[in-house]
Length: 164
Image (cartoon, rainbow, N blue to C red):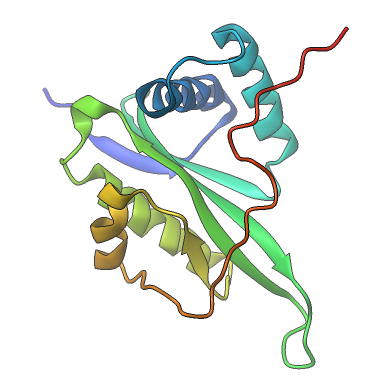
């Protein structure tokens, strides 16, 4: 019997597995890590708890096995006279385990993230994508914007500083 695959909001019981996915992603694309794995998992789980109001995580699960994740960072925006409550979203850390790639799970995650954005009443959702994933985002309505600009203000590959 084949266990069905589902996508749902991550629960407390998923957080360590989600941290492991983030660890795997960094190993796959970034090489050696600056902190031990167990320390990272503990820190990640604590971070996810502390940021639950601004960062929602969706997981792809087969039974209770987490196969993928996608995060939606929710950014409150400045009110206007037409809209006193405004927010936008940013898709972050979309990852599917290598053995499940090219099976449509990434596309299902993107669709689910956009649906979550609609449910939350977000004005727009952005993403900083890898080259490989751009076609998948484009199939789900993401497009280049000539007005969305970015400036790097801090080097993004900073390593934790030793304390003591």
